[in-house]
Length: 135
Image 1 (cartoon, helix red, strand yellow):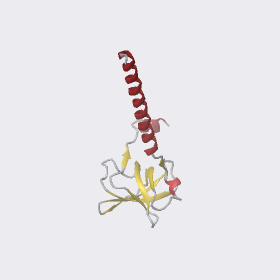
Image 2: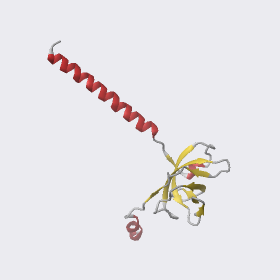
Image 3: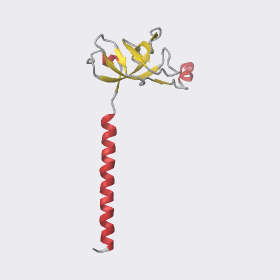
Image 4: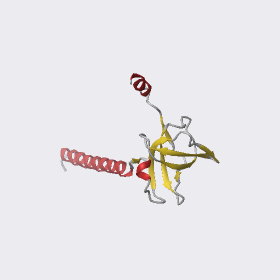
């Protein structure tokens, strides 16, 4: 076989393999992601199904439980809230009024149980105070 043709065949095979691998990577990254849901969207959640919950911790709702916290989460804009029971590592910035993201399952008692070590707090924007002061 001609050496230039061998090189061309190798190049085509290598490019085809790269395209297949890149397509597989893109597919798995998009198919494994889940959309975060607000508490108002989880009021009719199915027992046992996992959801990613995002919202604001209701002031006055945080309680210590063995190995974690019990609290309520509401939509960022306010409105009804849902109860969450979480056992695992608590991030330092966790507090009332702070936005959180957590993977939860609805329990049979209607309380959402957080998956261990999935609680993440969103830090408030440094521009938020400036915006409120201008208003």
